[in-house]
Image (cartoon, rainbow, N blue to C red; front, side):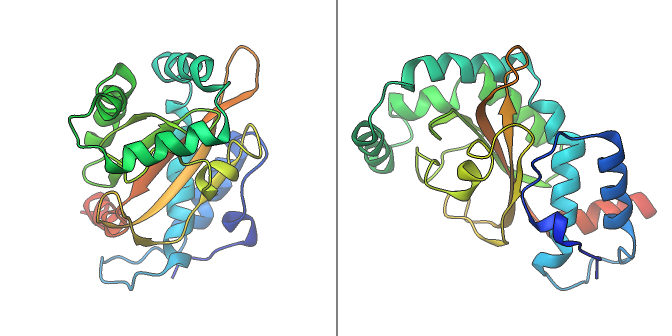
Length: 218
């Protein structure tokens, strides 16, 4: 079983540094089993998801395509009331996949970029959700069960905390994908202002961590 420190299960509020990622990699890989037959425990996957978020997903958050998409939507949604947001979320939940509201989230350059990132993960990533400052979907790799993520920890413990925050959620059956997965989320920061502008959430298929490790060993 992987050794887990208290710092790994709390939101990471300091900026990501090389020293931090190196320490996390070391603590996460120490004692990784040689086979994929280990039981599915949150304590085993929390550090693995966190390291992936810090080493890989953090780099995505600097992509100009994602930054531009969030900026553009923030300009449109900043004036929405709570009632407006709830109404949009309700409309999303009853909409069909061909609905323009859904298509604009699924069919845009940011969504295409995230699908390419997901496809390159060899099955590790089940979904990616990019959200604006209000927690509303900007781009997703597939249809989500709801449009507003602002009432969930993935938004409140990332964007709600500020730049550098990372949140790792418990393993569960996801209502959007129907997959048993864990989720990692982190704040997206505007490179020009240094301010938080949104968040990115990544769904992980836990067993794929072991398959990747087996492939690396073989």
